Length: 345
Image (cartoon, rainbow, N blue to C red; front, side):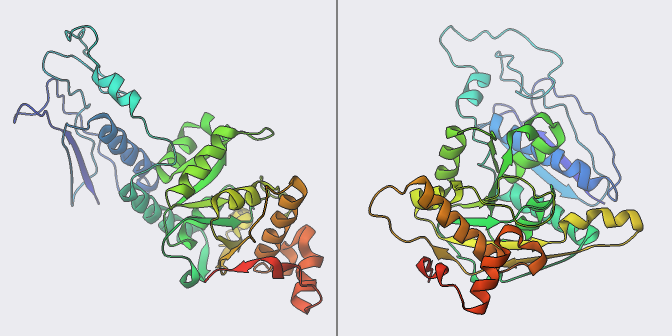
């Protein structure tokens, strides 16, 4: 059992915030924590964003889980409600014209969806680890070769909507993933993705905002998870990569780590009361060669194909799809096309 208490303390009073109304919601730990946990974390995360100078206290002890208070804290004489929460009673602000309200300050410093708290990410990873290891016979290998610092592009195959947790557990560092913009319309999925760190992408068009977000993650030394195929494979086998992953590598000069996994598409085996096996393999990092000038679309497509071949070499033969023959030729020593890639130290 877990007892979570979230308090919003007023900065000018030791007695607690104005308008504080206790309201506890008891929940049992067992079946509900994986579902309610992300919402509790988002509650804490959004409250922290909303109050730079209002201290937050997060306490946990044995017992039941409860949310205490409606977070109605307001500044003395300001009557500003907490953004994103139901505020109940509200008064008009008495601050002089031209003074920035608390709500305006929150909007001005709203963080991108890919910037998340490391603490929240670790909690999310623990939750997903429990779920993945319960639903699947999950096993990962090769993490010892993953770069311990600096920007990294993780290139993965895409089989199922539960792929992001599989990647999260296989990669030892905090990873920002790409997700289709359609998931913004799902409150549950959107909340989970925002907590874990995500860049939303509009499919079928050049999304420059998403591109800037990806490059920003890499410029700050982060890890970016990319599925070069762009969408889930309906057959389970590799599809033709799109040139975007090669463009990101060219712009950022970041090393690429291939990560392959299989078994997530077998989730429906539970219908037959069979627990599926999920395996993840992390490959060795490599880099694209230096370009004397901006590469053409054809050149970017060529290097995107080479990246997918590196991913395919980590997969069983039945998952290699359109790259099956080229992967087999590399394994037999009949092809040297991967020699242009630079092995990262």
